[in-house]
Length: 493
Image (cartoon, rainbow, N blue to C red; front, side, top):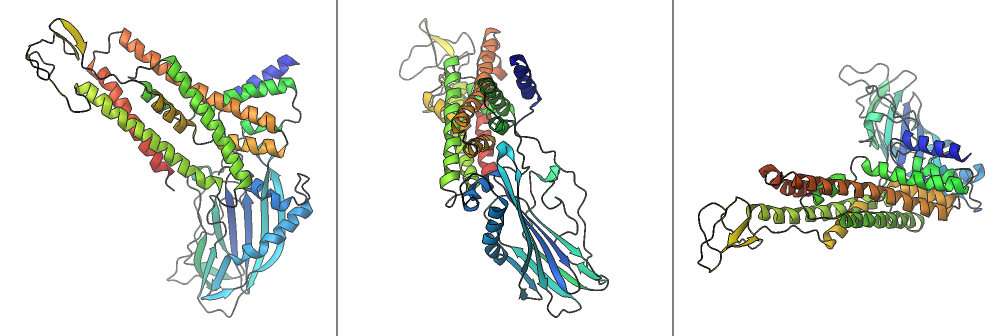
């Protein structure tokens, strides 16, 4: 039995290519879909509201009134009735400049199982609006002002039915997501943000001087992968064996997550290239990442639970990312200045001298001395010393770099924590989160050690006198500066 558990765990780990969210747009998203159908006597609108795992968790207190931990059909129905008036009030429809009231029809509220057994809430409305007296050519405006401050997919589709022609439309005639069920793979990095539409319509064919209703190009649905980390907390039963292998898997998933793009490997490596680092420094860096990431997950979880009415977690992420980028940029620029001066043979105050073969003097001493080699080490009256400014690793820089590496919590780890609360497995969730953070930091530590020992191999092979190798620390500091600037730029919405 134990060997079978072991094989399952190993296969699970090897089969996991990374951390992916069940919701293709992320666990923070609030997504909306509007399909507007224009007929001869009325306009119909199918409106769909989709909360991902974390927004659903935030709304749970308003839905689960009996506090039994379940979202029953009656509770969902009552919640939909509660939010419908306010939601419809923010759906603005006008025809020929005249506001038109939307009448609520059938309303369906249901949940689906998301990552870590957390629910995903979906509400559908079938709305209608009677057409006022129309003209041969009518102008329609629709604006969805709901959840403007939340990230997510917003899609509007316009259809023509019953002998009516729609033209000059800013929206398309075919849908992309099948009412938020399937999301196109090529659009996940830049989700649709269609919140308003204008179009014209009239009876009969499309006028000759008008643009007919267009269709979108074909799209391919994204493959939705399970979040392996969140699944660790939602196993039916936690036995000692399952808990043990769960910890191993969390460590492995953290390491895999660190090795995926954008998790500081280049920054860690570039920092340690040319620095006089030791394994102790690399270990300290990894420990700092572990602590920072764990505290960040806990902090964001507390924010999600108790302060979501004041600030949304997803709005905090860009600020954390920008601050992290500033730290990296500062370290990079400081190192670039120090290493460049060291390469050129000057100190930070501008003290410079030539290292050619001709005699020269330093300060006020008049004795001549020679440089028997082209490096920065030379002799004064038989005494050898170096003018190379050592680029020492400082604990302050290590701490700052570690904080920047762990400052942005992994959304999967946050889902794990919220799932642990939802399933009343808080202790196990905390342990898995720490294990995941250790795995992430461990991978970064290994990367740091690889760069450290790689640099020693260069020195041992006497390649350090090569001009390109000498310039490598300067280049690595420049890379850190660029990466910090890129992190700051990418964090700007």
